[in-house]
Image 1 (spheres, each protein chain N blue to C red):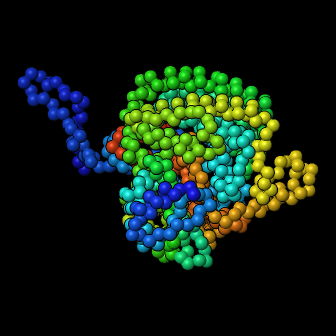
Image 2 (image 1 turned 90 degrees about the vertical axis):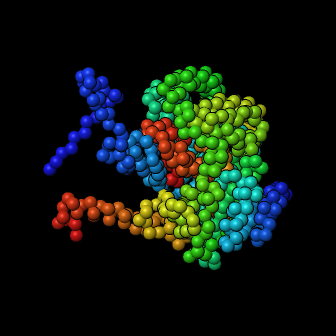
Length: 173
Length: 423
């Protein structure tokens, strides 16, 4: 089976941390972790398993299931030329530990995940929206958010009304 | 009301008359605004930010004290669109990610879908894809070279590179019928075969290209202005490049020899001979040299692909699997079953439940698609791992502490396209 060496290396690095290997369709070693173990596991992957670079941090919204979200981290090791993927269930009002102290490059990925799914990352130095405006009140990649958007021009209309106040005070109602 | 006057004298002024005390030369600290930072917005409408990127700068004089990239001005919700449109109908949207290399994005998405479906692409289909990807890479690097040069004042380079890029567009126009946003890659292969007319256009282009690259290098590499503004500007160590998740030419410029075409080959790249150029210093100049050399290597790969096209002439370029692969158009128009398959696959393509990640070496770095399927016609999740976003993230690392005028050179040398950054 592809990735046996990776699995052995990660198993050794994660000794003492509960984890479970998943069957993955693309042949990439994928493991499931509990949210409480995530912080320790990330540190072990960086320091003991030699994953130098973070490839992605994102989430999957499993609406209707509890816990609702599945946080996905993926890392790449250039020295060993392999990847690993981590799945962590996260509930709707829960937060996840950041990994920016280990991989600073994950800062934008975590900001995007927070923006799109509303999962806060504890310890992130600058956790704010990445793609949507700061005032935006929704998390667009959640499954209960419609594709056409919710009041897509609300922010524009508010801004426009504010702007017009200075020009024609009588027109701003 | 009192007015205060400050006399500024440049350099050390000579005493007005012998014996008189020397005029006091004011120092920076005498400036009433000394130490106060100026906030400056660069963009989102700025020609040198290569799209709608906004940079919040804090300046002390001309020195950048803090830089904060603000992205999202081109956010169109591509991932959400994929999740509501379905697998097959998302192909045209991938073109609009990194819009200077649409076919490369097509291939990246198709490869992820094929991994999920467990589908093999016939050899000729793979060769055509490699040819299209390498042409796209050259076109994207030409954009980099032209726009970065014009940002630093070398206007001629812009015309030189865009002239050659136009030739690539002529080739793509002859093959796909479009200059941009081609959408010519399908699940299981490509939409149409490359005919001999297109091959001769490619051959002619590849024959001319090495001499053109040499002449551009002659114009730029030894150019005093180009050298001074790029050498030792934006130095990124190997460790920094890895920590900040940089990939592609930006990582290789810092001396890390990692190319997905070599390390994790796809589309038969293991059968091609090419070298992976790496930098030594990790500055803007090294990243420039890496990209120029990559264009030469792309020409080499494309030549080998042409030879392979000659060997596989008449072969299949699209897999035969009616669960996932669209039937050829001529058969759709003559056969009832094929028409039904066409309709089913476009409107209701179902991929096996599971998840797949596939990354390709795009011109900007690692372009990955992470797809999650639950067996229905709509993806549960389609995440696009955009290399450009990581390149934007690295701007503050390179720019802080440098001069404002280096900003433009750094943006150019990191090379990103906002369509892909914002998705």
